[in-house]
Image (cartoon, rainbow, N blue to C red; front, top):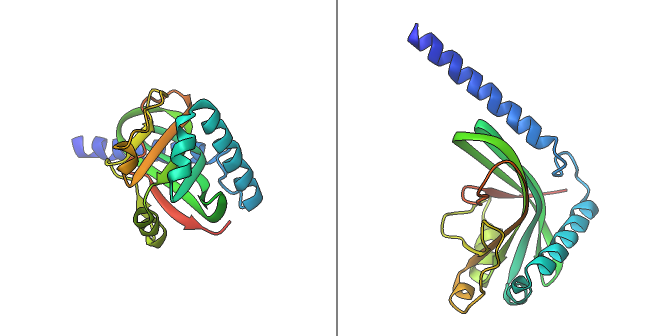
Amino acid sequence: MSSIRTHRLTRRCFALGMAGLTLTAACGNGVGNSNAAQIDARVTATLNEMYSEFPNTVEISQKAAGMLVMPLLTEAGFVFGGGYGRGALRIDGVTVDYYSAVKGSAGLQVGAQQYAHVLFFMTQDALSEFRRSSGWAAGADLEYVVSDQGDSLAADTNTLRSPVLAAVFGRAGLRVGATLEGTKYTRIIP
């Protein structure tokens, strides 16, 4: 009897997780939208918002070899969760590629959130590694220049030596502590 109950619970959790992913897809994050011009417009608006709210990111962007801008990542979950978004890689202010971001998680979680984020590739090697990969995953070693509380952190010389920096901002929703760890980025054709 216990194994039947566990099987039902597992199936129910899976179904709820899939419902969360469906909700994620319906939250205006570019799912099903293959318009490159619209992604570019959202990327430009996101950068303008970031520069306005967090002036320290202007200097960082000027020193970066490239920036991956994800205007909106939507996450939802109930036990199992997921997230999705689309954005663009810009080098010298010009879009060179488009990317999707996918995130999955399991554990005690309930809710949904949306946020924007920017990855600053501070070295040519880090940028090249990102562009060559068939699916690049953000690790725990990211240095955040905008903290999970929305505060700007100083862009000192030690911070600027990190190969990849991240800014997470513009959060809305009921989940706490947006992190990019485990997010997988894949090149797409819009």
